[in-house]
Amino acid sequence: MADRLWCFLLGWIFIVAIARANVQSKVRCSQQSMEVDIVRSSPQARIYLQQLKDYPDATCKPQLNDGVATFRLSLLEQDMLRCGITRVVNKVTGQKVYYHRIIVEEPADSSKHTFTVKCVITEVVVQPGDAISTNHTTVRRSVLPEGFQEQDTIEVRGEFSGSAPVPILGVGVKQGGTLVTGELNVSPGTPLQMEIFLDNRSAPIYGLLVTYMQVTDTKTQEETIIINGCSVDPYLFENFNTVNGDFLTAKFRAFKFPESTYVQFRGTVNVCLDKCLGIECSNGQIGFGRKRRSIASSNSDKNKLFEVTMSTFIKVDFEEGVMIDQALSEFILKGKNRTEERAVIAEQVRQQLAPTTIRTEEGPVIVEEVREQFKYKLTEIDSNETSSTASSTTFRFFFVFITCLYVLL
Image 1 (cartoon, one colour):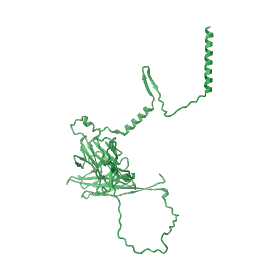
Image 2: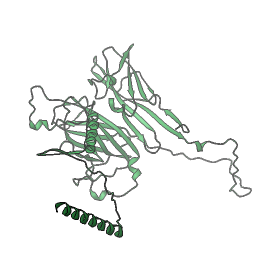
Image 3: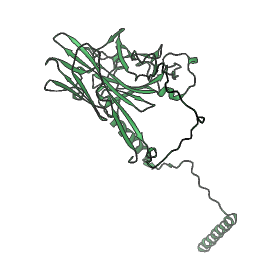
Image 4: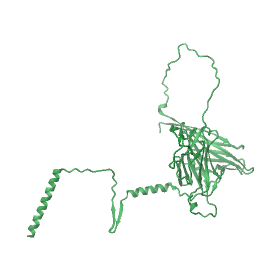
């Protein structure tokens, strides 16, 4: 609105180096995008986003210019997950933190260096009524007794202050009990396990709850696999379980879409103080495997301390020469096309509004459906008017009968 003032405080350069290498880098943040510059230590160095080493989308690849690799990643709602950016929203203050991990590989010494890049954006809303009037004078009444004097010297023994950290989410996939750290390439139907966990600093403070998850081919096909914290099809993707609340696991079988080898999981995760409450699903299971007695009513805002939008990629394809049988076809998702789905809904509405045609031996007969529901028409007839109408009808009948007899005679 025009009467609102939006102020954006942007977190400028914020890079955490996890490796020991000294890589020169810089981050530029705005409301719409995050730009990351990394100086290549050698012409052979490979620089890419985590899990997207050979990902074909050019938007997720850096542009090389004079020995500098530059990532330009969109922070807009509709484009944010395209390259796997994670967003953390503080539901109390409105602060938003966007982050991703960048990997630098040096073929010369076979080293690999990982960096976490962040942008912090705080939106401050100033209401028109909050403006301070310069002509306003306030007089405060003293509450201290007359003649009270305060000591000139006050000894301060110590100050204690602290704040809860912004949670950092990690997402991993295990195959055969081994965590896959690079680009995962598996066959459809392979048993896998997804893990969602907090960083070491946040784990003792917060708990996690996956409320929604969608799988997509990163193009037009998509399928919802978790809604309201419960799995839609536990055979393909089980419910998330946990022991301590800050480390979630879910077993699933690798699946793919017909026209794509990449599968992206997009999820919404609630971060709660201490632990999140489990959700009772239709099959009787409780989210995270918690017992029923541990679920009690509490403040609903507790599950909305932070809201994290996350994603992870896997590459799923059949091995060369493998024949697709009935068993393997179960792991090929047809998905829903957003454009086609809208067209189908429009066609269904059009068919419902069209007349119904009934075919008989004499030919088709169109029957108009009455679409008014719960509408009644009441017709009142006067008894005197009814009697006079009946008498008039009897008189006309008698007159016609006498006329016919006269003609015949």
